Length: 265
Image 1 (cartoon, rainbow, N blue to C red):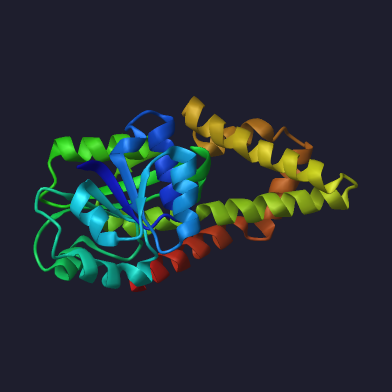
Image 2: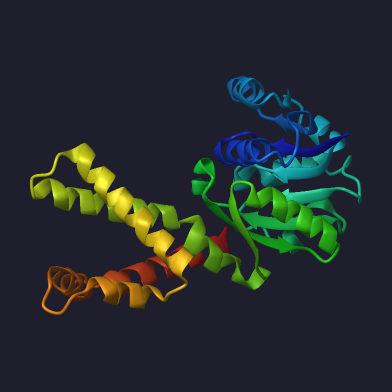
C-alpha cells in the first residue's frame, strides 16, 4: 500500500510531491498520483520516480493518505467516483477552498478522517504556508504526520475551520497581491530609468528581504517600517503618498472581498 496518493497532479500536487521527495519525507515508491493528462503523469514519473495512473480508483484503494488535488468544481464528481472504495482507516486531505468538513462528510455519505488544507503557490519554490484543519476523527498522531508532509514545502499551521476564509485571504490569494505590488514597484523603477529586468530583480529581492525580517526578527511590521523612515527622509515621503492613496484600506477591502467569495464557493 502507498503512503500517500494524489488525485490530480497539477501545480499544487507537484509542489507537494516535490517537497516530500526533496526533503526525504517519503520515498518516491511510497507515492502514487492520478491525472486525466498523460503529460502531467509522465512529468511526475520522470521527475520524481513516483507511481502514476489514469485511474482515480487505484489511488483511492492504494493510498493511506488520499489528497484531493483537483479543482474545486470537480470535487463532487471525484468523490462520487471514489467514495465506495475509501476505508475508514484512510486520511482524506482536501486542498480546495469552500469545501467544509461537513460538506466532505455529506458527499462521502459517512464520517471519515478528513483534513482541510489551504496551501499557496509559493509551495512551488519550497516557501508555502499551509493551514491545517483536522476533522473530529483525526488523531494527534495523524495530524502530526500530515503536518510534517506540509512542512516539507514551507510551513504549516493548525487553524480552526472558522478561520479558513481569513487564511485564504491572507495567504492563499496573497501572492497575487505581492506580485502586483512588485510589478508596480518595478514600473516605478522603469519610469525612473532602470532596465525592466533589473527593476524586477530589485523589487522582488526587497520584498523577499522585508518578509524575512518580519519572520526572523519577530518585530512588529510597523516597527520595521519605522526603522526605514528617517525623519525628513525619502521613505517617509513615499509612505505619506501610499497612505494618501489608501494602500492599507485597499488591501483590507480586497481581503474581505476575497473571504466573501471563498464562503460562497
